[in-house]
Picture 1 (cartoon, rainbow, N blue to C red):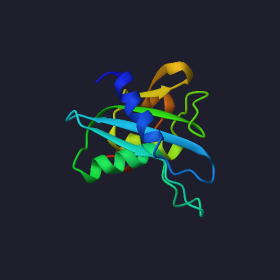
Picture 2: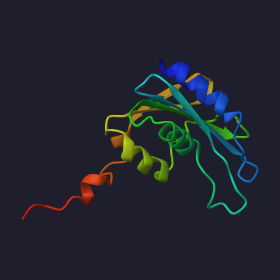
Picture 3: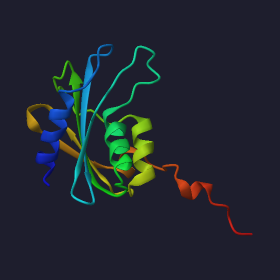
Picture 4: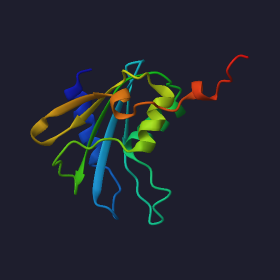
Length: 139
């Protein structure tokens, strides 16, 4: 699947965002190793803490359906659904990605006029904390 096709699915998901407090709508489309695409949108809550980002919604949906390996993620967002600049995933979402994706995992961020920026997970989250950090060193 091309980055453009993945971004179009993210755009559709962005249109379903529930963002009555911030007004910042985000959509994400996650390509699984199986070829299946999982979409997510941000879902806000008046208490803010229970809010879930589009990227995590897509990842959690994929995991709940048995997918554990991923090829790429497309993210698109903007105030009132209008994209004015690429919207990078937040730190919490980057940490979730680090749980399931290698450092070279591609993240496509949509900008105005259909432009797409490509970054890797390691660019967005250098020195990521992972399960390897929980390994004990041999004596």
